[in-house]
Amino acid sequence: MGVSVPKKLYVSVKARIDQDGFAVPLSVIWRDEREFPVERVLNVIPTLTAAGEEALGYTCMIRGQKRTVYHEQGRWYVIVQGKPFRQ
Image (spheres, rainbow, N blue to C red):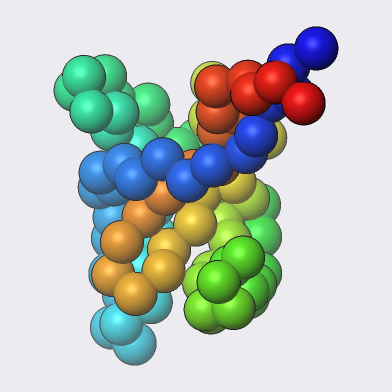
């Protein structure tokens, strides 16, 4: 039986940078150039990555669903379920 493994998928993000340097995502762009507008940012939470690095997790409404977009050291990513592996 295969188990799906979560993994980072780096994405492009259009963001607004405020006067204090804080980034607010406006849309997420997949590698195939599909663009998904962020309808609303619900909250922003500091978090640690699996490698122990600091990141910000932005919980957003995208296409009517809650999604989290992460910003880590100048790069944006989402967590997706990777290809299953056999146990």
